[in-house]
Length: 116
Image 1: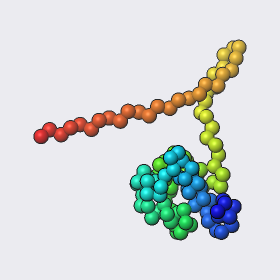
Image 2: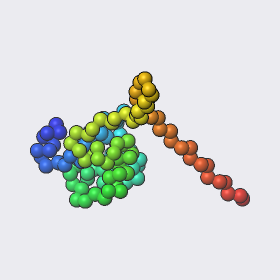
Image 3: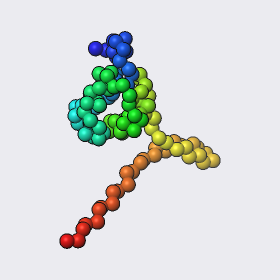
Image 4: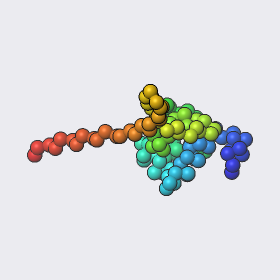
């Protein structure tokens, strides 16, 4: 079923985008795997994709988006925007350059061991 057919059948853009993003990942994620990554029930993912979810909390939407590596807005839009590379502009007297920003994840601190 195409996205246009899904929309015509009454499915929400969220239902369509969630399934599309989940299945187009490399490697694709199953509903169960996504549910584990997002720390939600598999039935929640299934209900959203099938248009059966009555209400969805913002916290749940953000967990799912984070697990997929997209923004919550990307899940709500019919055609998500392509991510723009983050850059800064540096100007000198002779030229202007765009320099890509690289984000590093901070190291997680090890938990202290308990003494026995």
